[in-house]
Amino acid sequence: IGAAAIAQVSRPLRQLERAASEIGKNLEKAEQDGTWDLAQAHFALERLKNIRSRDEIGLLASSFLYLATRLNLYITERNTTEEKITALVRTDVLTGLPNRLMLLERLQQAIGLAVQQGVVSSRPRVGVMFIDLDRFKNINDSLGHHVGDRVLMEVAHRLQAAVRASDTVARIGGDEFVIVLPEMEAASDAEMVARRVIAAMATPVCAEGHDLSVTVSIGLATWPDMSIDIAS
Image (cartoon, rainbow, N blue to C red):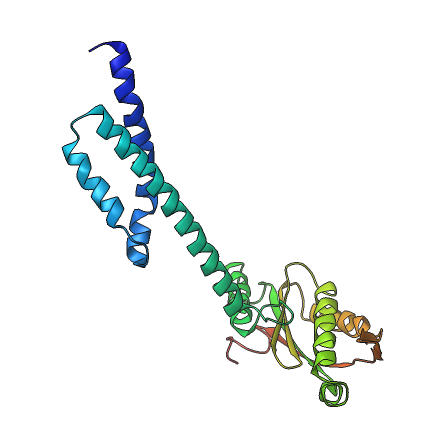
């Protein structure tokens, strides 16, 4: 066989190999999901057993490339959908903050990290700050929920600005927020954060043309000083 003939055969074979590799990366995942039509892919795989000519190799390579493109598109769209669903499940729709589910995960992680870092007497503290907006119901009742939502969004922004990037600010419902403070050196660190939160609320919140004075009530707990598990 001449060199030109070998090149004509080897090129579609390489294309076929690349296409088959692309499908192989995602085929098992798609089969597990069960929502992608794999009939064409399986048909192409069966044809591999009976290749007789260079033309068939070229046609089969084109088929694999087409299937690989479709499958990659499907996997990308599926992953994007899963990411969006996960985000909705774990975040508060109004403020974009972590919700109760993510809060518990972050708290578990913070305590787990503290446990790994030393004995009880020397390991860092984990602070949990419970924040409730005073008389928030009056805002909703007198000015409407659209104004109340604006207030909640602004409060969320101010709380995030008052803490470290490693801290977690979560909204657990209504006008209730929780801040997780990992790796504190002393229980008094939580009190310092509480003072920053109060200072952040000193400026009135402008919502829908209303300048509203918003104050907060804060409760503090530190691990392991005040509790030994998440539930308590």
